[in-house]
Amino acid sequence: MSFHKEKLISGFGGAVAIFGVLGLTRFYEQELQVHLLLIASMGATAVLLFAAPHSPLSQPWNVIGGHVASALIGVFIYQQISNPVIGGALAVGMAITAMYYLRCLHPPGGATALIPFIGGAVADSYGFAFALFPVGFGAVLIVMIAVIFNYPFAWRRYPLGLAVKPKTRAIAKDQTTAYPDITHADFVAALSEIDTFVDISEQDLLRIYEIASRRPHPGVEKSRPKKGS
Image (cartoon, rainbow, N blue to C red; front, side, top):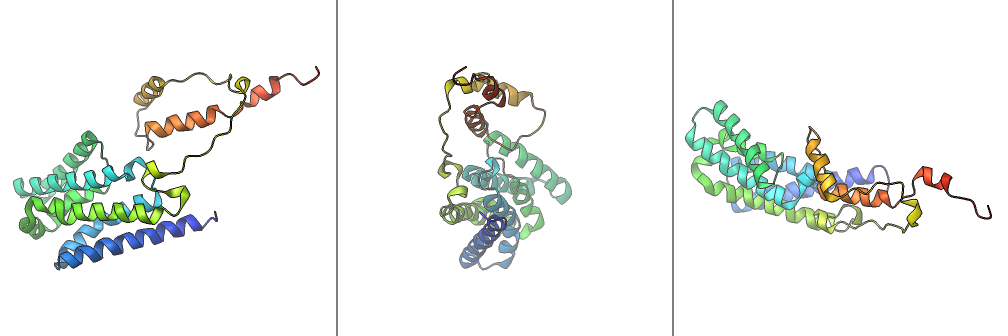
């Protein structure tokens, strides 16, 4: 794969996704303000879906759940607090907390939570239905476009469950003895001790260790006796 190919595919995919979301949203709703407000958060989502399709933050539940939950919170706080500065800050903070608990952390959801405060007329006319259309509609649509667009490229199929599993070659038993036996519980405990956010899923870490443990350790090859000795 050429150096520029992946970057060009990502950029073109993002353009196709936003064209589809913006075009269909405009078809169903002629109010231009809705499109402009929605496209800000969906543009950020497009970066994740097409530049990092295998990221835990890019998976379908993260996209749909993150946007819808954030929209609901944004509308609710907008209805309760008239001050846009205090309300906007509280909406984003609550959206982040909700996404954490719902296991659908999606950074563009923070922008979605702010939409009611940026375009108050939209929240006034739509109410909580705003979370379904245009937000929920746009989130589902951009996920569908990402699935279809990424599928022809085996190395970047989306979502992560459709990704092609790398083939691992069998290694002699004596070549893996240098690696300690790390269990699932060990990984969980290690992750809990890291005082930072790691943008990789527990399942991916286990796959990385599984693949790495099948490779011969540099020190093993040197210690193996030569034939005829």
